[in-house]
Image 1: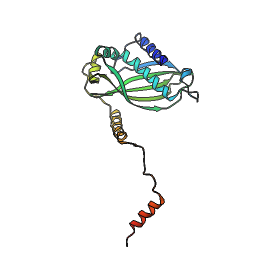
Image 2 (image 1 turned 90 degrees about the horizontal axis):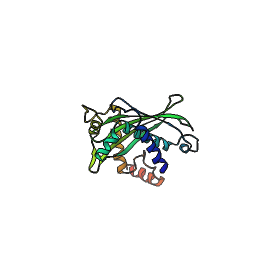
Image 3 (image 1 turned 45 degrees about the vertical axis):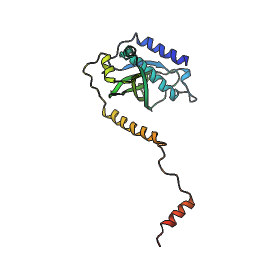
Image 4 (image 1 turned 45 degrees about the horizontal axis):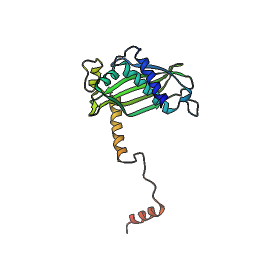
Length: 207
């Protein structure tokens, strides 16, 4: 836990010295290297570590685009509600890679953040992720459009969601409702016992 905190703190301190990132057309880039502690038994970066470095990328982004400063001004705290990750290639020990982070869209409550892990030696995209996140106060969510205005944006619409992100959000909503109702991944009913099947068949016979 201490190592995680120190790594995040290091990213914050370095981000304060890096160029600012425009929220609309710029993306944050964070250069990292696979550490020994990131490896699994297959000697490549553990899937869970991808989420850790995506978090570091978001920390770098909110420092450089001004959101962290706005969060301190309004006493906000960030949360992540969901994530969709696509693992595409492996990262091995001491591989250098870049975490790319940019805003994919927003509505009146949520912001969608797109991230990629790009391997330095060949430019291969090793993973892509879409996070649904928000800044909150004690009373509820802080509107994303207002947050962007706090970062210096003008003429920001209250909602701006690309079709692909909107389709994902709708599918995610359906899945959330299904999971809330109980197990959602049982594709077929369990097979009936032979006795029950025979009884059903006899009952279906006509005189």
